[in-house]
Image (cartoon, rainbow, N blue to C red; front, top):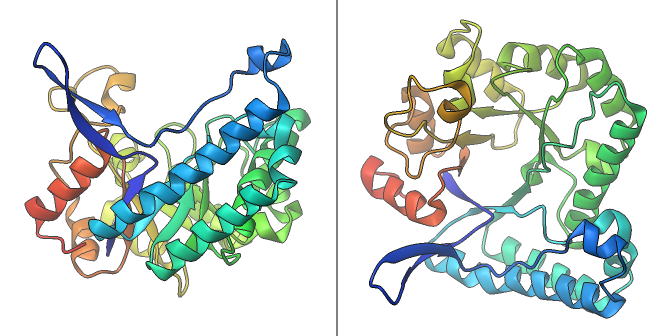
Length: 309
């Protein structure tokens, strides 16, 4: 299997006082909505930011290869303010050329690339405006993957949560209306509040969408669904495509803490559910490591649990 790195590469830095801190060395630049609306960004500034962020992706690929990391989650912040400035990226030949180059390098290296749009991407909302904006967000990610030359398959997953609770029919309705470059890549992930594995399985049977199993979410809230009973059904939603899963832990000492503290991702991984670990050792799944220490946690897992890559 492949342990997946999520968006960042963490390295230590020693401060002047001798203390060590850990920082993300992927220098992805942000743009602020308020500053944009106040006219503080020129087109050249936005273009510079976009070009620079794509260059950072090209810069990280050799590090992934050095550590034999074969799965990578692309940051959703690659093109900040894309909903307002997307044409700047779409019409720039350098950006399109560099994205295509990154896509070729990922493929040549055998690295699976996925993405995870943010919490405001809710296709199950009662508000048409929210759904419309969510589809625009999905279209942005689909454009990036198209430009990188990735096939329209859940292997290159655009992964989202179910969103607003008790809206299974709404998810089915919106999913069915999506363009193929989104629909063919879309996956749904279980969560602790709105859509557990059982609910997603009902949706999957209707629209044939794969389920990204998150063991941390399932442990926190599963409505008494037996892990061993639902796990094989989740795997079957992927057909002949290698399933993608997520792994994180509750921080030590937070097991009985309030909900929001218990659900927060830990710095490192100290345990893996037995059935999930079995598949990892069998090379049957790819698993995104959502621990806060990113690559450091990923490499630690290899040694701690005897995982090859």
